[in-house]
Image 1 (cartoon, rainbow, N blue to C red):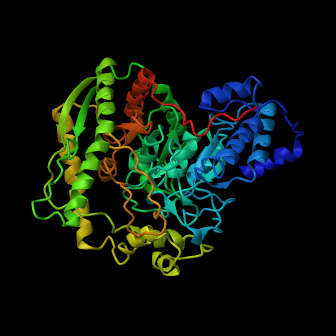
Image 2 (cartoon, one colour):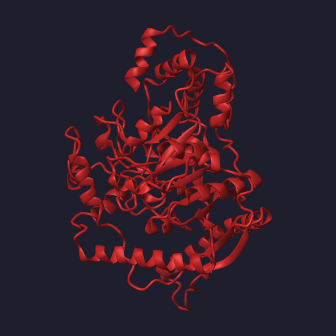
Length: 537
């Protein structure tokens, strides 16, 4: 695809367009398309505008550290797309849509670091399937975004600390934190994230974005470093629901390189975007899923005579802090419920998470095997196994500590069977709840608390106390394998975004997008961060 574009650049005279930079804040796909079709904006101007914002705000200004690698050919590709438009019209539905791509996804002409300095010079010899699909629709991979090292949290040896665009002292969630901060800051038009345990929805929620985790087989993972293959998926991170649907229309579907995607046949509408309607919530039955810790947190008191018990004192302080942080999001969630009712939804409150028999076991069994299989596909990879990576040193201490616990585990372990049994029991139990109550979807806050302040020792302390997991409700969707979508729900008193999450049955992406679209159109909670204003013209 890119070679074809370069031929066009060589064969067609492309004039340099000297018009003033367009105002890129909150630009949508149809707005950009209309501006280019009318001649008010060229692809080169659009790409240059985003490059200017990255230069002004990513390493400079608030220093968001959202961008790992800028595509050095982005302007050449923009010129080619301008030439294509003049010669024969639009190349596809995403003609000249600049995409911010998580650096977990392969590009054959840019490094793919996985957030690790150990892979800083690694350039794969292939493009991921999602990259091929995006480019076939006319999109430009504008930049690879920073990510939590080997797909966890917001720290990496390749880039350092990723920062929240609304408050750079706060964490951006992870591990698609660079995509979240970058799209929130208007460094690109749309983004692609990866979600194993919440890595699309967390960064989207704390960045006032829409983030969709699809049903696992819907989007090909070919060309993406795996973490837990039975949970891994990719999806759009955008500023509007409609743009998320437009991106999903392009990246979803069967890919023979990722056989699980064969399950998509018969489960996809002709278009996710075409199905959006502001009336989608009328008559919809929405259940409010109350997590067990969602009610007020009771601090554990320190018994008389044990004031010197520092562990007990820490527990009490943490409980009080947690309750204070939860209190900032609860009113937003209550208002969201009222807004859903106002749009005609039938809201069934206090749906309890069903009790599932058996022992829940963490899924650490797939990672080493999947990583080793993946690296074996790349003869030019600098490391071939997870053990080699860890023995090389250089991985951030907190991530290295976590990865060490995965070494030696495999899907042959007896406890892995317990993981699969628990998941299946959980699916059946929740399906029964939804069937009994005739629910179309469930809702909850993506996080019950705003993102925490980044501690000074985050990069050096393997056990840094950063409050990262406080109020985290993202784990249910990955465990089930069901789709979930977060949409802006408003802002905490200190101006930090919160997300409302819709969870649905498998293959219900169209329905979830419709519900979120109706909610978004009624509330318009999204607003850009003030840390990265429009550039002067």
